[in-house]
Length: 280
Ligand SMILES: Nc1ncnc2c1ncn2[C@@H]1O[C@H](COP(=O)(O)OP(=O)(O)OP(=O)(O)O)[C@@H](O)[C@H]1O
Image (tube, rainbow, N blue to C red; front, top):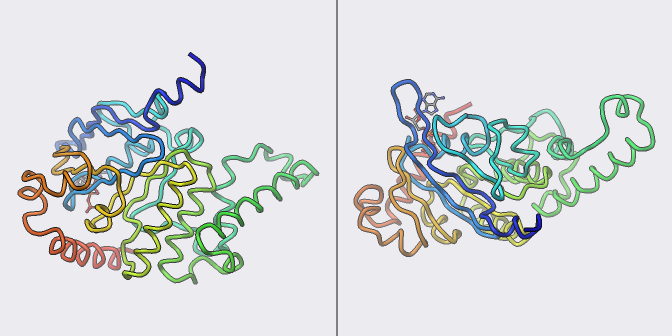
């Protein structure tokens, strides 16, 4: 089998039986997830269900107690920088930018993992370093244009409006040339217009060939975005499937929704936003 054939024979990202135990607490129990190429998968569940822990297992921040994570059929080492180089990028629940650097510099930091020149070449600022740096700047500017921040490249990151900081985080993640992008609550704190713009941006990212997993409390957003939705409850995968099937599943309604999705969406959204604004 050729490398290309192998590549298309597997889901781009697959978690098999991931279990994560902290002391006496089982935060995840035997959770599996499959992300096919060009798809968007949603991960929902109440507070404390294990969603962020699952992302941490997918990106090597945590070493799962049991289970494996595979990218295009190859096992991913539980090491964040290796995972990034292999092609998995993420954003965080609470924005993690370099607040005192410019917008362009923030994206360049993401690009750095794809640069070949070592420390000596960068110290000497030789022609090959300059060529690579120019290429990195060009790619970073393309990404800023892609996320709608072309005119903000010289701004200091912390001065950007909240929604733009989230876009910048996405641009920085895309600068690593990922196959898979993991978004942890990308619309938290956004107004309805920003949320719709974020939805369109995620579709545009998917259309460039990047597969996406999204954690969100905004259920309406998830159901209008994803090809498939997985529901976590107390560390267990309760149900997964197409949005319309998950939405109507009696187990989901009983264990998670309990009431019409619109009602839950506004309650969980309110709580999540309060939470975000209170955290530093
Ligand atoms: N490093 C850790 N050490 C100990 N317990 C942890 C750690 N990380 C997460 N947990 C626990 O694991 C459980 C799942 O937490 P997690 O943050 O993954 O949930 P979540 O679904 O992302 O919640 P939220 O929607 O509130 O962000 C919680 O009980 C949490 O306290």
